[in-house]
Image 1 (cartoon, rainbow, N blue to C red):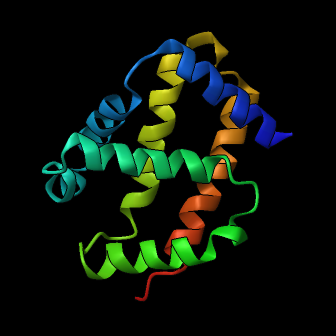
Image 2: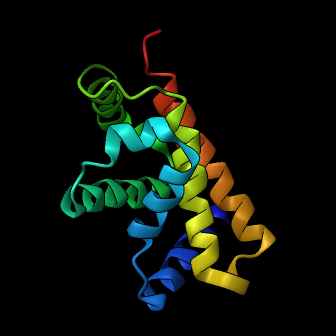
Length: 132
C-alpha cells in the first residue's frame, strides 16, 4: 500500500513540471552548512543523477535488492567525499519538504507517512553501512 502511495505521489509530482532538485538542494543547504560545503560545487548533472537515485530508491519496495549499490554508495560517500552519516536524514527531510511544497494539498497524511517510512529505511540502510 505504501509503495502505491509513493508511486502515485511521484507521478503527480511529474505533472507539476517543477524542478524538485533545485528546491531540494536549496532547502538542504539552508539546513546544513556542512552539507553546503560538501555539495554546493556539484553541477546540475551530478545533482540530477543523485536525485534520480533517490527516486529509484523511493520506488524500491525491498531495499535488500539494492545491497550492492548501497554498499558502494555508502563506502564511496564516506571514504572519497567524507560525507558524515548525519547528513542523510537532513537531506531526506529537505527532499520530503520539497515534495510536500510541490504537491500542495495532494500531500496528505498518508503520503507523508509513506514517504517518511521509506526515507527512514533508506537512511537506515546507508547509515548502517558506515564504519565508525
